[in-house]
Length: 561
Image 1 (cartoon, rainbow, N blue to C red):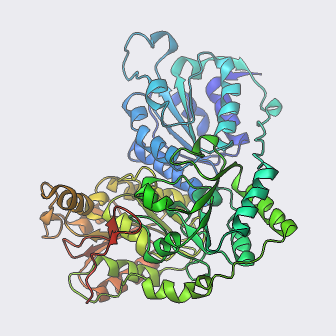
Image 2: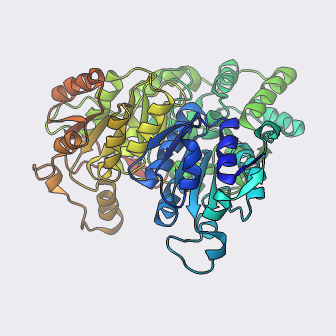
Image 3: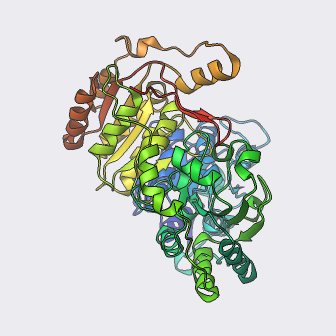
């Protein structure tokens, strides 16, 4: 039958499993929107194009299901770039679709025509621009395949308007999704990895975000339990092992790292790293991080092996398949459990070395905000955060006990990710609490998206750690350059800025709190309100966060009393 390419695209999306879309219609994409109206796809109209991508991103993080981010051409399309980058660096698949001028106008600089193929090419797995209607089905088939294959990530369809409206012969019954092949590990390399672990006196496992993406946390924990190996989680794998598990050695790193994680990393001699990138905020000074220890690096993306430093053994594999192969090889080769006494000491050391959070001061210590959050919410609660000093405190201090409940902007550190991400997560799992924790400056980046939460009755809880400063930038200015400029924002606390009125103006609820006790009560009111609820917590203005240049030199700035 003959149908338009726009209609064919919608039919393919449905067949590929898309059930939710985050978008903003416009003249450049309306020939696709025409067919979204009656499709079995729920559409959520966002207030800013960037928010479409962040919502679709977190929707996948929370539910491991691909969503559509869709908007019009020109500035709408360019507003997608930050969200595409955010998803791409964290390996999050997303179908992004934007309008484009007619094919015959592309060289004429018409209204809202911009070269998205060039602009977005470095922040996606691929940008597709069909020039004929007949190209659309195969392009979309390849797009869905690329999103899922190897290292996952976003793709962008730059859809010329005349192609959207052009007809082609198409029968959705004949369309078949392209199968994603498995990335299997080399058995000889797996055997070598077991031999390295067998020779270790103080082995440690790093659970990376790739383990979360492959949903293989239980298998890796079982491997660690059988062979008594402490598990360090990267920031992207937070919650992959319960916070109270006897083998949870916390995070290692120079920012969101935790004292116990850095200690166990520094004392290790063999590191089994599964599905991680060795990012700079994790490693810090590479000489210190590497030391004399030997590294086994497993990743699905061949280019990741050796990108930061050359491991002693590199294995290209899907994380789940590699863990399964390691388990089988360890049994076959008779790997003995580690007998290092530090394994039994871990729970006590973790508690002893934990950063303090129970400060009872007024203004509120930022640490106390996370103390109250840890108490207030159950293990199914989903948390989002974007960037800055609040994100670092969140990574250091929040206790997350289940995978896919902590949904941060990791590699990009995107201010403005927080609120639309909380909405996207809530769409994926409306039965769970969705909470975003951010700073007073970060709150203003995508604040308009609380209106979306209100309109679509997907309530989220927004906790503002209001320190009236660009806290992380101030810390960097003072520590690295010896000055402080353009970072103080006293008006965020002195009453000039009223975030409660902002909340109410967007159809939400809100309150400002000044003491830990008021914060405790506010969190309970937020939970039972059934509304999107903003809590503006007035905190110590100039508190610094713990960080350093290497995992052996993280300085603590928290007061003792």
